[in-house]
Structures are given as C-alpha cells and as structure tokens.
Image: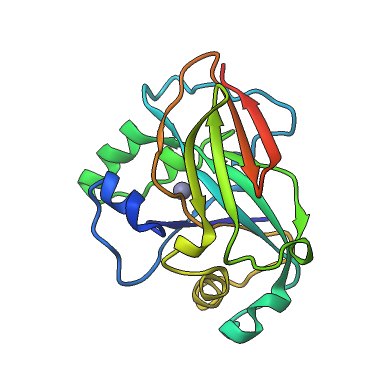
Length: 203
Ligand code: ZN
C-alpha cells in the first residue's frame, strides 16, 4: 500500500506558507509505515520542534489502474475518509531551502492518521464536503472539497500518469488553511460532514 499526497491544493493554504501557486499538482509519497496504528497516540518525534497538523480528505483506491481518464476516475474509488498529514515543518523548511525531498518531514512513523471510511454513496457530492479539525475541542481548520484546485477525479487522472494505483492505496488530497503546531497533551479530532472520523492524543 502506498500513500499519495497532494500538496498546495487549497489557495488559502498556499498563501499562509508563502508558496507559489503550482501549475501542476505537487505530489509526494509517504510509506505505509507512516500510518499511525488505530487507537494509538501520536508521539512528537525527537527530531522536530514544530510538528504541524494538516487535515485532509482521503480517497481509498479500490482497484488497479494506470493512465486513468478523469471521466472514469469514479470507478476507482468508493470510500472517502479523513486524516492528518503530520508534517515536521522545521525539518521540511530546511529541506525545501536546499531543494531536497520531503520524506523525512512527512513520511516518519505515525505521520499519517487515517480515520474511518465512509461509502461515497453516502454523500450527494464528493466535491462539496465540509470537513474540520478540532484541537482541544476548538476548530482550527475547516474546509470544503469544493475549494480544491484539483478535484478528486482530476487528482486520480494526474497521479495515475506516474504511478500505477493499486487496491488499498490512499490519496491525501491536500489541506486547507489553518495548519498549526501541536504540543504534548493536545487532543485532535476530525469531522467530515459533521461526523467524527478520527481522534488522536498528542504525547
Ligand atoms: Zn498535506
């Protein structure tokens, strides 16, 4: 299983990190070992002093595909989820300055929170889903998939030009504005269309 992440997919988040708006989706991959085991706490790694949460809508691929046309993309997923792309922002910043890959900042153990899955049929429109992240029960990020620069079907078409998608692969579709850091004893929870999809304690 691989995790494919889209960066800079929401205009307001691009602005807050002072990044340039990309002409193509920013794509990176996290290893399967980055998935935080269910019910497990997130431990701030010793190599970072600035771990950021990024809440993101997830898509689970259900069958193998390559060079998928956008119009056929819906045949390749039927479950939607919500998760966190934890990012060691201080590590990432140093890597970015040197033009180096981001894996150490985003692919470390526990860096991918994957919440529960819901059938896409339960939603009238996957391109109009409200989601939010709460820190200590206060909303810190909220977004709607209608604000994505690249919608789910476009993402699937784009990434499948480069990577064969396999059953069980997960796509992280990018984070809206409001990213911020966590500290020990914080409690994060994520909601999709008002329903809690995950919660995690920070240690
Ligand atoms: Zn992200």
